[in-house]
Length: 148
Image (cartoon, rainbow, N blue to C red; front, side, top):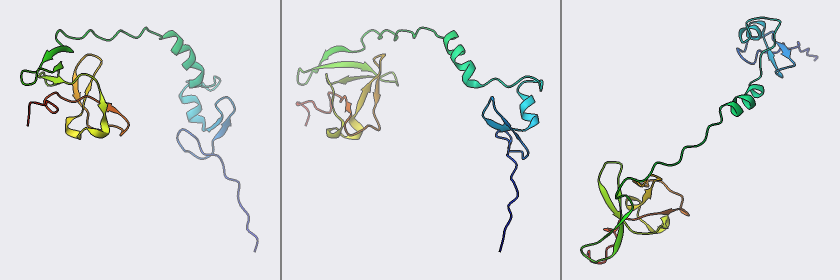
């Protein structure tokens, strides 16, 4: 039994219409409508995105702004009234203050509900998900020796 296969015409890469022609400049098959849609005229080839990205990126380079200064009181040391240990005060995203232990600890040894992260602006944020090899901060109240 002999089967014959009919040649399959290429499908347009943009609109998936059959009967597209190969565009050497773009390296993909395009139908006549898609070839002229981006350019407006059939005698001009579409501009490749890769060609204009280099020029656009060089033109739009702007300096990265410096991080905002920490608000007054953020990261300042305070002393626990119960045990006398130092802790750092940080404002939370909700506007409250929390005393965090100085330094970071391995995430693996800290319960999920007690993990904190200090953002670049000094805001304390609860750290929900973290890699087991990551590091986090803890509140002083969770490790205060004067608490039961």
